[in-house]
Length: 498
Image (cartoon, rainbow, N blue to C red):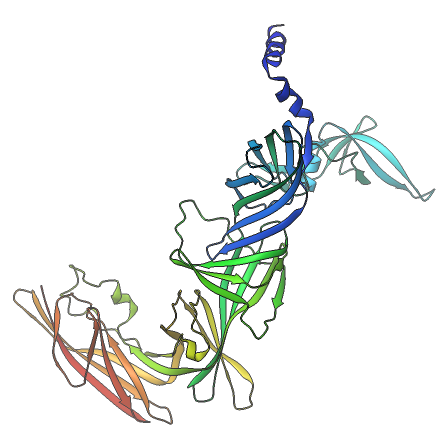
């Protein structure tokens, strides 16, 4: 009797308005307005307005069509009708969505119906049985339901495994919902309709930049179009939404949202002559505002043109960086700086790059968000062919971009150590490097030879047979011009000391 007595006493002590709130429940209306601010870090800020009829006192409010990827700790609510009247006391994010496994698990031990077909009468009939095993099982570690075997039911006092017939359930069990939703416990002092504003962060609503460039015949001009690629895997759709995009490296304390999934649909929004995005500043980041509203459906990828430049001045550049990658990790190493045999292996590939400037004169001249650039060129038949791709980082206006497209087929490089000396008990090292570059093309080329004094940060060039430029403490550059079918040899001696 004691437990019952305690429950009765506890109930009597509760305020009457809190007890009455259990029976008050309403559902918020659909969004009347929604604005999206999407960051290029798989993160979005969603601001929406809804009309809600809120009873006076305590009540439960259901907010439907909430993204499945919402960060519940980021939610902010405000009544635009009366900011002081409405308070959210509790919030529950309900995401136990209905599926076959969960549905059957709710009916274990309960009566269900099987609709069967009588071959003789050619009519359907129904039998009732108790569901014993659903054939599905919850994985505790992953929180998902998986199929583990056949269904088991007790029908007419007998146990049937994989019972024949179409299973029919009487109703949707309590606790399962069709779409993610929020349930609030709300305190309100002004009864009636409230125009409300809700904002929150969500994942899997992201954007990125992609660029397409077309080189002219002699590689001196290119046309480039930049596209914003929006991907919505948040679990809900947004109609007639305002859209802002933020580019920049924003610090996030928490872990990143779940990895993006592949979208099921792709929509392309073609551009008009005028730029569709207006670029402004936001703190130390760049903000791009779409000058119209748009729809972004769930499981959809949409592309909108961001920038377009015609006849952008470009230049093809050949770079030979002969030190193989395996030695770069030993830069300034105490253990290996005096080893004579290290750094002798040669990389033979000569990279081909295309450079151009992000300025207004070329039709660009806005901060370019980071993204992938795909480059095409027309062949002798006038058909576009893919010739390479590279990624660019966030690039301010008036800065130069350099795209690595691949390696030249007809230009070969060789790098070799021709002499090595050690002095002062190994505290001074002199090394002579010989670099050969051969041009098998039908026209002369200029190749930039890059070298990296990697043994130690204190060095000097003692002699060189070619002009060189110190780019920084770890890089020197030899610009050389090579005629067709010619080999150019660059030799230099470098001294390290420590």
